Image (cartoon, rainbow over all chains, first blue to last red; front, side, top):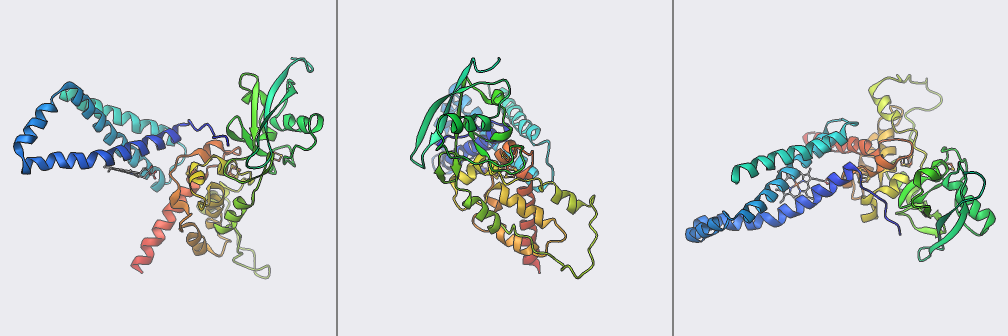
Length: 113
Length: 242
Ligand code: HEM
Ligand code: SF4
Ligand code: SF4
Ligand code: FES
């Protein structure tokens, strides 16, 4: 069977939302584990924090904040779109959500380097 | 371009679910629709080619097919608009069983139309006075937004949620339900909310908008489904209070 070409803005927004949601779900357990080190093994946490100072790791953190921002903005967009009876400007909302996410994660990026 | 000096490669799905594409050389004309091309093959190359059409003017909704991977009404899709590198690929509508060649089995599509509560139940009989309807009233405006649906199933073929979930009622049926829900002369509004809030109901929709993007009549099933999401949720909380 043929698959339709689906590369229109709302479909891409959907894919972005799903990918970021799944990635966040994979990341969170790891995140909680590291936080738990503060209580269970402070010296290992310190080691990890030194490791987290590496530029590459900082860059990965940028990615994570971006995921969260993109997913939050995308989720808010969906909720606004479905729960407030708007119709036409959805595409611009989708674009706005991504823009907002870039802004937020970009700010974080500038702060950490 | 004049006459038949040029041809194009048109691959057409032949056979049932396990068929394959077969390529035909079709003369290219200045002004020509995909349906013209399919008809040319049936008339001059192979009379056994099976496909559907009726009105040829975008009214009946019977001619929808996949054209270069996208669902389209073929009688109003100009070849010039979709021709890619001198070639066109035409297949039966996605998300429906294939009967033969370009004819998809529309039964699931129409069964879901009924399952979503799409059959009108009058709120009054012919013996009662006709209740006036304000054409500019909010309900009526919302209902009118969906009435130009021609049941072509283009949206149904475009929807990835339909592709992934056999039970999902799909955009056209849900839009029909929303239209009736807002029709003051429809008597079974609660029935509609029940019908669209089950496993295959409106809450499966991820608002990815392929339905609205591809609907040839420029309708907005995605917005209609969002309306159903709001009303089903509202009635859920109302019932819990009551
Ligand atoms: C921070 C605020 C958040 C908001 C406003 C939000 C909002 C949403 C919404 C509205 C959906 C439904 C999308 C749809 O119907 O397609 C969704 C899906 C999802 N969310 Fe979130 N979410 C948030 C945080 C998170 C977090 C922290 C995680 C990771 C654990 C997560 C994981 C997911 C996953 C895996 C999906 C399914 C994706 C899909 O159905 O396409 N979300 N989110
Ligand atoms: S908006 Fe909903 S119904 Fe329309 S294509 Fe997307 S999932 Fe399907
Ligand atoms: S909503 Fe549009 S695409 Fe879907 S069946 Fe009706 S006319 Fe066709
Ligand atoms: S033949 Fe009727 S809509 Fe195309």
